[in-house]
Image 1 (cartoon, rainbow, N blue to C red):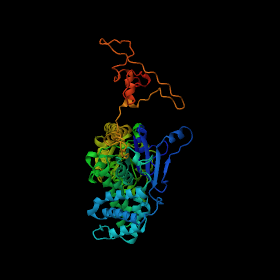
Image 2: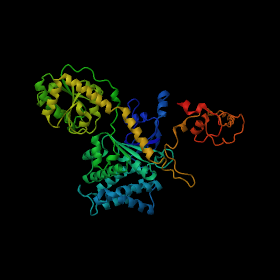
Image 3: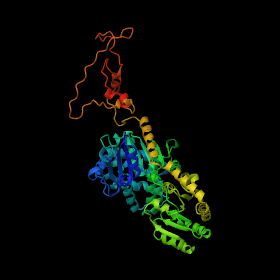
Image 4: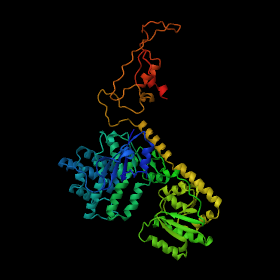
Length: 587
């Protein structure tokens, strides 16, 4: 089947050899035909391109990769002529409805209709980009924003807020005018289903494809897009009214995406709970963990000679390395030879110096090492006896799973996804409790047999949950389930007298068996074999030797029947068998 992968941010094809989630999905489902549709930054070309490779085998491999269609979300807007007076009023009415859904709590149900109306108008004349940057669109936004009843909890908007918000909304709505719709080759209407990876604006083309062409879509989120927007907009360089308006847009878009998606596949049960709070239907939600090729990596080697706690993550308050430092002070009071190694880069300016000052104040600067960014995660875990996670929130399971794959015992704060990832194979402690964290670390450092048992159990648990094969197998079943329940080629309206629309699985597997007698390109087709007349049968089952075919014209027996049925027709009486194309010989 034809699958459209919709992503946001960067080109999903990573450098050769590195591999990403989209790469692993495509490589594991080679029986399907994938195409990427990327909402890129200013580096996007806005057109259609196929990844190019070098010469030789690498070039052939790159040439076989799926096509990549890019659209820039920032920078110069897509080309398009400004709409006329009548069409401009239609654009203004649809835009007014969408903006009211963002600013008036009682009109939130108008977000979807307004969005789809803008997409239909953009599909008809391509004037949406020019309208969104016009003075008319800004006047609509300002009028609704300052009207009585609009949500002004973040403050009254200024003129500069209207200008900034209009530009940001134009960028968010830019996918509605992408040249990706329709049933022509490369259009989303010609796909059997869409797969949205990441959510957010990447779901806009899938919503439009479903509205215009009836194409179902799947949403996969490894870390919720809406949650990341709420966290990121705390430090955005905009005034609070603009932030509130943009967050209202992302919230409405997320709710509409969850409402229209055929299946939601969050990366953890923790994310699944967030999706339910945003209106996701539990019956259409399935947890599919993010597979990683690190499951094939061998376990870490021998433990270091000195008892060592290893910590990894970004040096920032959210990861709470200060908790690890205070807990290590208690550990060192019991085990003077213990060491603490912190791997990670500084995410907040001056925070590394702050942590170093904390270690100095606690009198253990000589036992604490700030190792910076490791060459690989495997090297970081190999440096320690026990792996420690002290974060205040653990939103994604990848780092925890990677530590468990090393075979080292894990101690983590009981936040986010930690409980479902670590389970009974590690020790969980409350956040911001240095005494509990120190007690768990001392229990493992003093008991080598328990440490080894938990490390092995954690490695086996991570290999079972985060292997690549279960992920590709899960999406293989999801794809087949969706296509079996959805009409095939939904955009192809049946013509008069053309019969019903084609549906998947309408022909048996034998139909697709290749006839090896078929002439190669450029060769003359072999002359068809003369049909062998069927012998009339006597009552005792013996042939009469006569060439009379009376009474056998409607029969379909013998080996030739299998071949004829495999071609989708009823065999004629006495048809010569074709063993080269028979189902029995093919299997």
